[in-house]
Length: 68
Picture 1 (tube, rainbow, N blue to C red):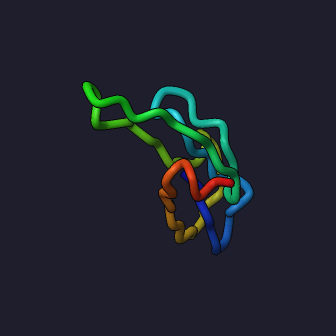
Picture 2: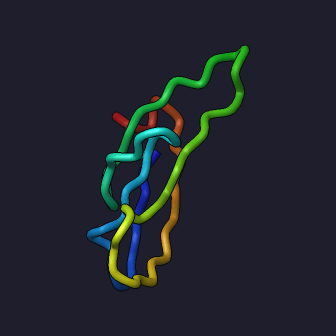
């Protein structure tokens, strides 16, 4: 997964695990999808106390062999 962002406040965006998003815009992560669990919760958010922002983002999924 890769999250690309544009707008005002991009540097404050955090994403990743629904329980502890720590990735920033432009970062990529590899997540296993198991046959018994076809869902993986993802969170895209601003940390508490962040300034007002306007961010558009795109979350891209690539198959494992496309990662190189």
